[in-house]
Length: 286
Image (cartoon, rainbow, N blue to C red; front, side):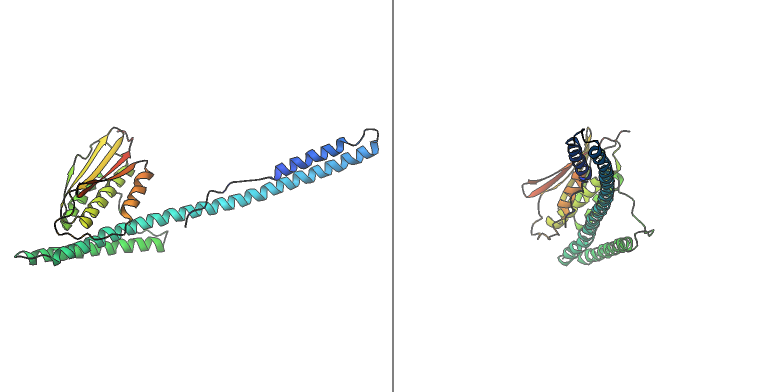
């Protein structure tokens, strides 16, 4: 379902009134001055008609203005609903992709574990699965609370910042992705760009875990003038790794998010691996 185009006010009342008055003047002008009685009567009729036409035009304009405002209000409400639906869809994607995806990957890795450390590895995997399950359940409850009760004081997570990047990168190690983080800029970065940088890094590492498995990955965040550049890359799937299909919405949603900030998202292949790079304009000054 797509949002309808923005309503446009198209009022022809005054145009019709103007045309009517012009025709009336034309009729009056045809009445000869040598017929004063007829001219007086025509003038009186013209005044009455002019008043009626102007009154009709004013009422018609008022009615159309009211209809336009109602349509504009409905259009704005529909836009708000569509935006909220997209936000909820992104939140649900994050919940399913990152939370439940972690559970799936850890379970798959634990199932293939062999050797003397197999029991310890399975225990660690079960602990990660339990933690991810609790986090996903908490987030789902929070989201449902907000949806059921728009005015409720449901607890919200604080917006992520650059300071959260080390934790995001470290969390990838729980599914075997050994990621390194390089060159986080010290210069101030706007809150919206910081939030998007965290989203890019999280999505890229989740895709690496899903499609390449337990492999090294590299994350780089740097500033180039008024642009913040965030890139993530890997060397391709691990030997014998079978990719786990996702919902297919992660990168498209990420592209929408980056584009909304006026940035660009590039996805390139590196041999068997991939690199994702987002360039985000940011003119935050100290």
